[in-house]
Length: 221
Image 1 (cartoon, helix red, strand yellow):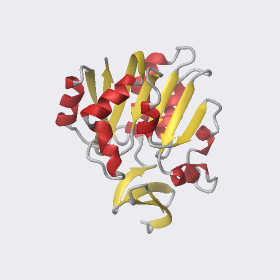
Image 2 (tube, rainbow, N blue to C red):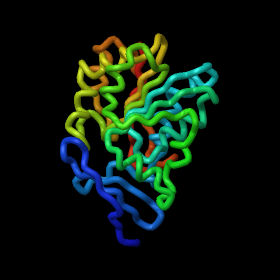
Image 3 (cartoon, rainbow, N blue to C red):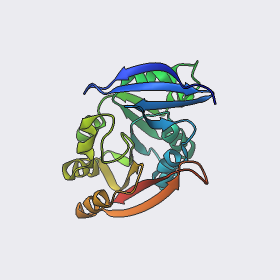
Image 4 (tube, one colour):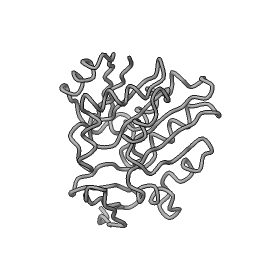
């Protein structure tokens, strides 16, 4: 097995250091030595987009928000499903993550970011949500490993009652909200239900048929 290379690093607003790494042809982003995401295991990130975008694939002018770019697998899947007149906003807090994806030397999500349907906002997704009441047909949040924030301490507020209410308020009537988590979180699921949301829980392999199981929560009013 080839040695893990550290290619780049970035610092989130709260000081957390993120490393872009490569082993052979596979890329990963790591925090505190923990793999946060990888190009080798991304099936659940695509599933996140499928679960909320498939029901609106024929909707005219669908307006969608993705919180957290990562390596762009959720974005790429959303673009594959949505119509040509959709508008997809990607909120990414760390500008270097966008730059890494656009770097042609890394062969990541540069092509998806150049799609005319995509608008990239270098901002906390919480700010985008707060400023966008009744705006989105679908919202996908993959800003961390789940309710236990790993990359940025501020991410945790999105998984509290106030954050859930703010996110739900940014949906259009009939809209869907989806959260990615690296594990089951019964307490978070209960919080979604207490917010008056109908919740569907889907467990998805990191690879198509193997690897660790991740969890996607899809909620609707």
